[in-house]
Image 1 (cartoon, rainbow, N blue to C red):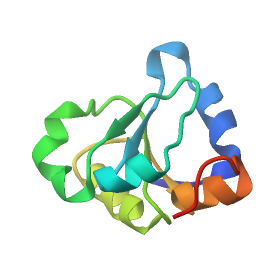
Image 2 (image 1 turned 120 degrees about the horizontal axis):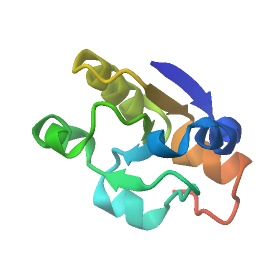
Image 3 (image 1 turned 45 degrees about the horizontal axis):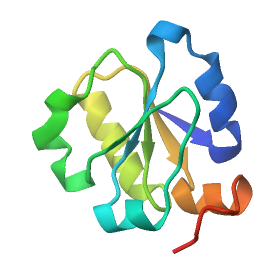
Image 4 (image 1 turned 90 degrees about the horizontal axis):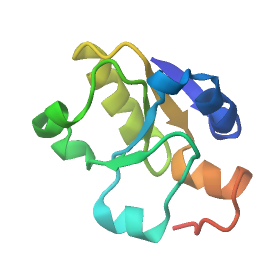
Length: 112
């Protein structure tokens, strides 16, 4: 698993070939996703709360790169480590989470 800075996310997404585009796996609770969301061109967002990931693993493609996201980066780090143990090879944790995105990249995304 690799850590990726929010400032490096757009370049990382653009670096993948068209057939291997990553997904953003948002592991926050639904109310958090409603409060603040991240949209990256070329990387659709899949929202699965952290505690539901093991039971919904079949919804994810082991061959597709995963960018794991939460509020500050701790839950997403745990999910990224879990995904690696399940055989996912291209897993990235978004360091600082949506909070860092709101502060450093897109200040129109609300802080909560």
